[in-house]
Length: 150
Image (cartoon, rainbow, N blue to C red):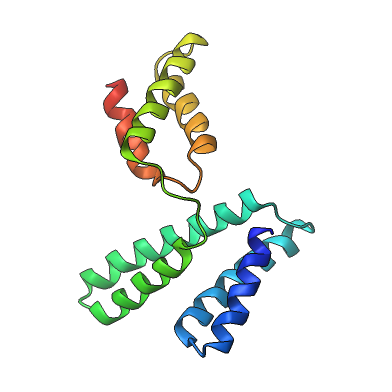
Protein backbone atom coordinates (compact mmCIF):
# COMPACT_ATOMS: atom_id res chain seq x y z
CA UNK A 1 0.00 0.00 0.00
CA UNK A 2 1.33 3.42 -0.91
CA UNK A 3 2.10 6.03 1.71
CA UNK A 4 -0.59 8.28 0.24
CA UNK A 5 -3.19 5.52 0.65
CA UNK A 6 -2.05 4.89 4.22
CA UNK A 7 -2.56 8.59 5.01
CA UNK A 8 -6.04 8.48 3.45
CA UNK A 9 -6.91 5.44 5.60
CA UNK A 10 -5.67 7.23 8.72
CA UNK A 11 -7.88 10.22 7.88
CA UNK A 12 -10.87 7.87 7.84
CA UNK A 13 -9.79 6.30 11.13
CA UNK A 14 -9.41 9.75 12.73
CA UNK A 15 -12.91 10.68 11.52
CA UNK A 16 -14.38 7.51 13.00
CA UNK A 17 -12.56 8.09 16.28
CA UNK A 18 -13.63 11.77 16.31
CA UNK A 19 -9.98 12.72 16.88
CA UNK A 20 -10.17 16.30 15.60
CA UNK A 21 -6.52 17.22 16.30
CA UNK A 22 -5.16 14.23 14.37
CA UNK A 23 -7.75 14.72 11.63
CA UNK A 24 -6.85 18.35 11.03
CA UNK A 25 -3.13 17.52 10.86
CA UNK A 26 -3.74 14.71 8.38
CA UNK A 27 -6.04 16.84 6.24
CA UNK A 28 -3.41 19.57 6.13
CA UNK A 29 -0.87 16.96 5.01
CA UNK A 30 -3.24 15.65 2.35
CA UNK A 31 -3.76 19.21 1.10
CA UNK A 32 0.01 19.72 0.78
CA UNK A 33 0.34 16.46 -1.16
CA UNK A 34 -2.60 17.31 -3.43
CA UNK A 35 -1.25 20.81 -4.06
CA UNK A 36 2.07 19.39 -5.21
CA UNK A 37 0.32 16.84 -7.42
CA UNK A 38 -1.78 19.57 -9.02
CA UNK A 39 1.29 21.77 -9.52
CA UNK A 40 3.26 18.96 -11.17
CA UNK A 41 0.23 17.30 -12.82
CA UNK A 42 1.23 13.77 -11.80
CA UNK A 43 0.98 11.26 -8.96
CA UNK A 44 3.69 11.55 -6.32
CA UNK A 45 5.89 8.62 -5.34
CA UNK A 46 6.33 7.52 -1.74
CA UNK A 47 9.75 9.21 -1.68
CA UNK A 48 8.18 12.51 -2.72
CA UNK A 49 5.43 12.15 -0.11
CA UNK A 50 8.15 11.47 2.48
CA UNK A 51 9.90 14.69 1.40
CA UNK A 52 6.65 16.59 1.95
CA UNK A 53 6.36 15.02 5.40
CA UNK A 54 9.91 16.10 6.25
CA UNK A 55 9.17 19.63 5.06
CA UNK A 56 5.99 19.79 7.16
CA UNK A 57 7.88 18.59 10.24
CA UNK A 58 10.67 21.11 9.65
CA UNK A 59 8.14 23.95 9.34
CA UNK A 60 6.51 22.92 12.60
CA UNK A 61 9.86 22.78 14.40
CA UNK A 62 10.60 26.31 13.23
CA UNK A 63 7.14 27.40 14.39
CA UNK A 64 7.71 25.83 17.81
CA UNK A 65 10.91 27.83 18.25
CA UNK A 66 9.11 31.05 17.29
CA UNK A 67 6.14 30.31 19.57
CA UNK A 68 8.40 29.50 22.51
CA UNK A 69 10.32 32.75 22.02
CA UNK A 70 7.02 34.62 22.04
CA UNK A 71 5.90 32.79 25.19
CA UNK A 72 3.04 30.96 23.44
CA UNK A 73 3.62 27.55 25.00
CA UNK A 74 0.09 26.28 24.31
CA UNK A 75 0.48 26.85 20.56
CA UNK A 76 3.97 25.32 20.65
CA UNK A 77 2.52 22.23 22.36
CA UNK A 78 -0.10 21.96 19.61
CA UNK A 79 2.61 22.11 16.94
CA UNK A 80 4.58 19.42 18.82
CA UNK A 81 1.50 17.19 18.82
CA UNK A 82 1.23 17.66 15.06
CA UNK A 83 4.88 16.63 14.66
CA UNK A 84 4.13 13.41 16.55
CA UNK A 85 1.25 12.64 14.16
CA UNK A 86 3.38 13.34 11.08
CA UNK A 87 6.34 11.29 12.32
CA UNK A 88 4.21 8.14 12.39
CA UNK A 89 4.38 8.12 8.57
CA UNK A 90 8.16 8.47 8.32
CA UNK A 91 10.40 5.40 8.00
CA UNK A 92 12.09 4.05 11.14
CA UNK A 93 14.69 6.54 12.33
CA UNK A 94 18.33 5.64 11.73
CA UNK A 95 20.43 4.94 14.80
CA UNK A 96 23.42 7.13 15.65
CA UNK A 97 25.75 4.31 14.56
CA UNK A 98 23.97 4.00 11.19
CA UNK A 99 24.26 7.74 10.61
CA UNK A 100 27.95 7.76 11.55
CA UNK A 101 28.65 4.79 9.27
CA UNK A 102 26.73 6.36 6.38
CA UNK A 103 28.68 9.62 6.82
CA UNK A 104 32.04 7.81 6.82
CA UNK A 105 31.06 5.81 3.73
CA UNK A 106 29.81 8.90 1.87
CA UNK A 107 32.98 10.87 2.69
CA UNK A 108 35.17 8.00 1.50
CA UNK A 109 33.20 7.72 -1.74
CA UNK A 110 33.32 11.48 -2.38
CA UNK A 111 37.06 11.66 -1.77
CA UNK A 112 37.66 8.57 -3.92
CA UNK A 113 35.89 10.31 -6.80
CA UNK A 114 38.41 13.14 -6.58
CA UNK A 115 36.23 15.81 -4.99
CA UNK A 116 38.11 18.43 -3.00
CA UNK A 117 37.26 21.41 -0.82
CA UNK A 118 33.59 22.49 -0.62
CA UNK A 119 32.67 20.03 -3.37
CA UNK A 120 33.24 17.17 -0.92
CA UNK A 121 30.54 18.55 1.38
CA UNK A 122 28.08 18.84 -1.49
CA UNK A 123 28.71 15.32 -2.77
CA UNK A 124 28.55 13.83 0.71
CA UNK A 125 25.26 15.58 1.54
CA UNK A 126 23.73 14.56 -1.80
CA UNK A 127 24.61 10.93 -1.11
CA UNK A 128 23.36 11.09 2.47
CA UNK A 129 20.11 12.79 1.50
CA UNK A 130 19.28 9.76 -0.65
CA UNK A 131 20.37 7.11 1.84
CA UNK A 132 18.97 8.72 4.99
CA UNK A 133 15.82 10.35 3.55
CA UNK A 134 13.16 10.47 6.25
CA UNK A 135 15.34 8.52 8.66
CA UNK A 136 17.55 11.29 10.06
CA UNK A 137 17.39 15.03 10.68
CA UNK A 138 19.48 16.41 7.82
CA UNK A 139 20.53 19.55 9.73
CA UNK A 140 22.15 17.34 12.37
CA UNK A 141 23.72 15.15 9.70
CA UNK A 142 25.17 18.27 8.07
CA UNK A 143 26.77 19.32 11.38
CA UNK A 144 28.30 15.87 11.77
CA UNK A 145 29.65 15.94 8.19
CA UNK A 146 31.22 19.37 8.77
CA UNK A 147 32.86 18.07 11.95
CA UNK A 148 34.15 14.97 10.16
CA UNK A 149 35.53 17.00 7.26
CA UNK A 150 36.91 19.76 9.47
